[in-house]
Image (cartoon, rainbow, N blue to C red; front, side, top):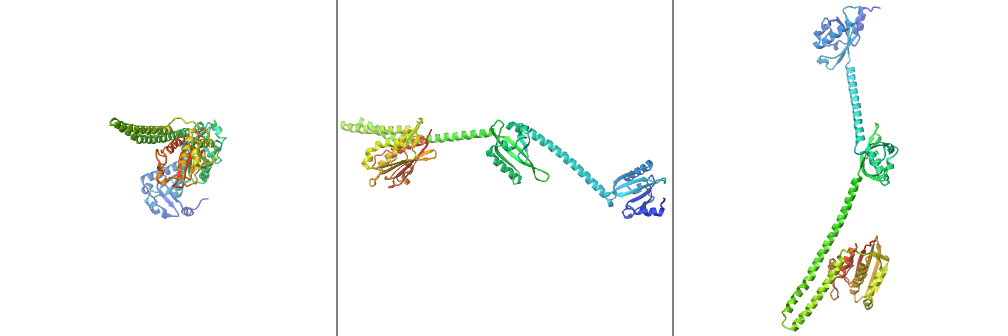
Length: 504
């Protein structure tokens, strides 16, 4: 049915698109639109004009080509273009050209604005490019991770949230001796030292609660051969898309060699410190001995030299006899000094000590026999409480220690007080504490405490004392690995405490 021309015009002018009637070479015959204000030119200025008079050369050539192609091929042709005018810059349009059936030398061109569709399409293309780029990046990252995982010089493992091994690299298999298949049947709990497991699990809990991003710790892993291997473990967590923990990545570095070297260095340092301490002690004793020699031999030697000169120049036999008597006494004093120095050297020597089981009751009874007369004369009460019955110790040293401490207690008893001496032993861990206390005249420790165990130091006048005994037993006790201390006050008695270190 043929539509009247008036009705056709009304129909075409009601659509939102621009409809043009053109000749095949691009001359506008007529146009219709419901929004003429959206045209680039007023309708009256466009009718009868060639497209080249309205648009730039490039765009009009494209328009003309597509119009001619549609006309010649009797087919619908389309193209999109951006507005060439500043007033409509950024707007995109679609040109659709159709041949008109039954009308010669005519085509219909429909122009529709597709700005929004174009923007959406551009966005989709951009998203598609980004997706492809992201996929490619993921693929590259996976390749990088796989290469780093497989060929890393550090042991690596993927572990699920229950501790099951998902995958391991060759280095970890070399460190712990298990194959990848064996690992996949294990949890990390199975190859962790029991003493290190709780610390590891506690760190994992902190990681799962996001209190920490990762953690490192030294721990022992069970090697397939049954030995434990020290390793440095570093753990990070990988999250799934919903931000929940998915699995762990563990890096495991064998530190057993470094650990062994550090332990060896620590032992060497300890040995060096012990040697240094021993050398320091020996140097201190050597300096002390040098001082003793210089101090105690210089006087007698100088006196003997003077006496020889006096004897040589004596004017009478009686004078010479007197000088000879003085020379003999001086010689005896020098001999005594040499004997004392020999005792000091013996106490300080490095000759091996012979350790044996010494019963305190038996050793004390033997020593007390040497003081029978003095104990009877002074009516001294001896009390013994040996809760530690025996000690593995050099017998000659123990006898010397008890002898000298009893000798001091007897010698410095208070005349106005009934003398009482107590000997007591008790266990002090692996050591034995020997305590010898008395109620004698005591010592002013504020004045003499620092000199108490020095050579030839005496603190009371009117007593036959050479100041050798305490010096000697201090060396004996220290050589055997113990120490001696004292607690005293004038008129309050004295208490010596000896730590004896047994050797087995």
